[in-house]
Length: 330
Image 1 (cartoon, rainbow, N blue to C red):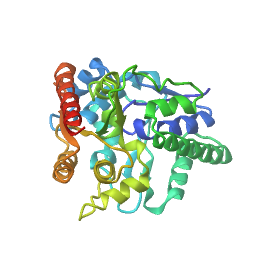
Image 2: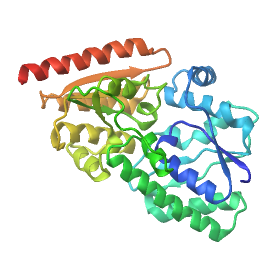
Image 3: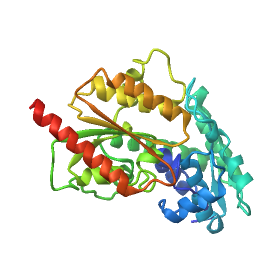
Image 4: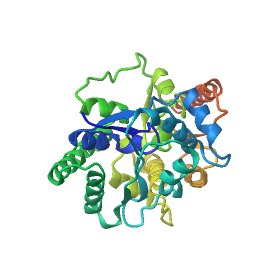
């Protein structure tokens, strides 16, 4: 392998890492990941960030600190849009600038502008921008792009089959996984809704999914629902929400509430303190949820002061409530 590319294990990592890994490896570069989020990474990020920044972005600083001295380049995409009228949080647009303004002594930053309003071929141009920066052969970059895109499509299909992002990454890389993590099955199915970079980060989510699975609860996340179903369900809202990630969270909630082919017993929404779009979606889902009395709702809000013990108490009480309701209705 050649030079080392640093990828913070946060934010867009949870959506797109398999494609990034394939692309850079095909070009002959080694990817260096920061460690999974832990208390040290969280505290270092919080110490650097301004107070009103939401926790996932504070943590991102901690991840950059963890790898910046071990790599030749940092990969921090500037995400603008993921399609026509599919906008994202402005912090994603300014992320490379935020990192540079906050952290010193950084290696060169690869900051491709990802704006997919013009479709997939604009992403192809992004790959060649990166190839040019890294001085790689044009056709080698072209092949790496299409191979990475195919790997990403396999990743999406695996998640739609019910695998988590972590499980899907392992399967793509040829590893075997154990889907029977819990010996007990309480016959309860719960949707866990939130951004991938929250619900699939054990530190940020305080181990929410792992704790539910240990209780014998089947967990459904937005990634397990097809994009078409998410968009179709989101249309139940009279006005289109233009933040794409939040629209998909809302679409997942509406799909589980009204269109899911299996019975759903509860929905847990987990949001980061200080995120405006999350706060709006939470209230919209709560209002719609009143139309389905069979589904219990729980809202969890996390910040740097949240602890796992308090969260565990709440989800245990929530699952007990669902069990009592099912027993009464049964």
